[in-house]
Image 1 (cartoon, rainbow, N blue to C red):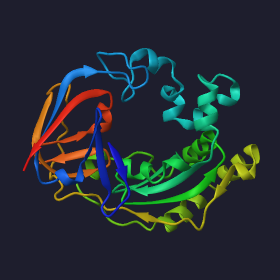
Image 2: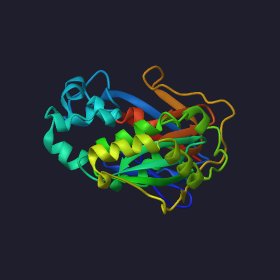
Image 3: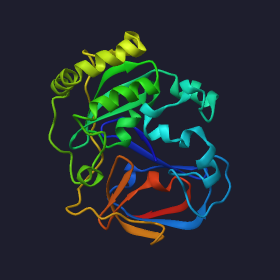
Image 4: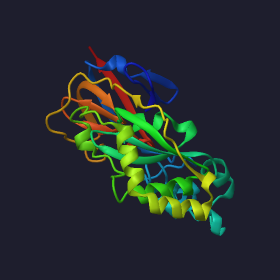
Amino acid sequence: MQARAGEPVEYGLTLGDHHQPMNELIGKSIQLEFIGKIHCQSCGRETKKSFSQGYCYPCFQSLAECDLCVMSPERCHHHLGTCRDNDFAERFCMQQHHVYLANTTALKVGITRHENLPTRWLDQGATQAMVIMNTTSRRAAGLVEHALKAHVSDRTSWQRMLKGPGDKIDLAEARDQLFGAITEELNALQQEHGITAMQPVFDGKPFEFNFPVEAYPEKVKSHNLDKTPLLEGTLMGIKAQYLILDTAVINLRKYSAYQVSLSWRD
């Protein structure tokens, strides 16, 4: 599901050759059905199970984008000469990255490539976000994030995120407190990797996002298409990569490689 910053955030879902704007379906009764086939989003082969949100097992085992360091960037091993795909590393990892703070109903730290903003924040359901550091590579950003994780989570509580927008956070104040807490670690990292590899941002612009949600659920119940192929209900809103129905919520990112059908009525 594609997301674009707007007032509110605008969503679209591509099904085959058809692109469906999703905001216009809010308030309508929809049916989302898994029709039984999963195709790897890399090689296209049919697979019985999706790995790493859309890959067959051979691609999951061999592709650089499925390597352990994608989830743990501080463990990047490109500099050791053991990367699965050097071309991928040069295009995606050895590029400018940002360390950011976001409010996903609680403060979190994360990293992303420059061209992924603000999509990364929208995919996480952030109502506020701000860049706090520029780095020259994914590994450098991951090392800073790893230091910050001792003081702030790098995870989003998706159940809490889907219950409401949460309270506002002073991200600039949080940034200053966190930089104060990792002064020694940051100095050591800059001495090892070069001061230009990790540059704090003190004049970063805070962004705010409003998601198209008419009503949040009191209790968050997640729907599993593998167990129950058909999901029906009234679409109450969309946040992050979740459709919020009056019957359940569903994370569409999880089913990226699944063939599904979508229908609706007023």
